[in-house]
Length: 328
Ligand SMILES: Cc1cc2nc3c(=O)[nH]c(=O)nc-3n(C[C@H](O)[C@H](O)[C@H](O)COP(=O)(O)O)c2cc1C
Image (cartoon, rainbow, N blue to C red; front, side, top):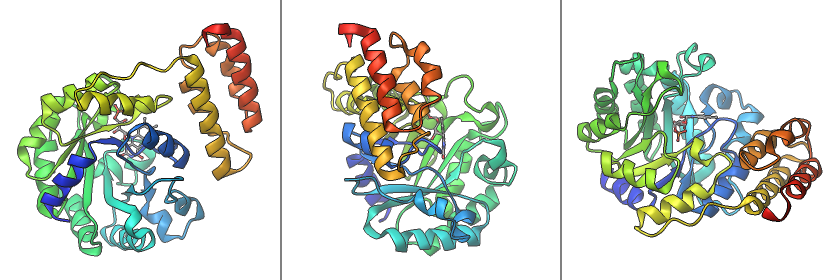
């Protein structure tokens, strides 16, 4: 798919669920897609992990029930390993792979200390070599996700984007924070607009979109071709329905009530259990997010932290709804 093809693709896939390690698994992706996300990213996948045929890593590539396509994000810093594993993923996933993204934005210490993620923004020559190698190894589109820059106050994203484009990136995704900023402060959408001006490939905007109105504002202020949502979707897959409506110029659907939030949490737990078995400890954080702000949610926190199975979660949800009374 050439650059024109990518513009067409994003015209039809304007709202994306961001890659989120530990969060954007099959269950969560299924619910976000159902609510209107046009495409969802896998959790980031280690190229090194794949090269060791690591079972845990392979598991990240499984599609959710009903998921037609998924975008896969790879992280690593060795061009050869990245290229080999990108080719393996493409061969393994075939038509179910929408495109491949290279992670150059993750600021976590355990990632950047190995030279992966946003550390690559400090070495644009290596970053470009990775993109060239991956691009040469696959026939699907390749994108790069990065930040406003590495060091606080030093915006390198527009220049970095141009280098990635020249190296063969078919699209870029920009989170408007510096790597050193982690998740503090707010995302600067001006950086996304400046990247948009700097390159001729599609630009995906990311950072602080939490409602349909935010999605519209980001598109208006930056000219981005698609909007990517991460934390705004935690416990809130409805944000995609809101973004979809708002971008279409329609009224946003009302926020879910307590009963709807609990019902979604129950479904989420079941979907996780279908894929992972009886132990769904990773549901704990999702449960907290679904319940945040509801009456009784703080009291439920300790109980959620002891839940392991669907039945355990159901018991806490039942109790919470009883506490909330008819308002649920
Ligand atoms: C729990 C969590 C996990 C994340 N994992 C990844 C990841 O695997 N790859 C990546 O590129 N970004 C990752 N991110 C960053 C998000 O994709 C996104 O760029 C960032 O959260 C800003 O968007 P937001 O304001 O919509 O949350 C993660 C963020 C969070 C909160």
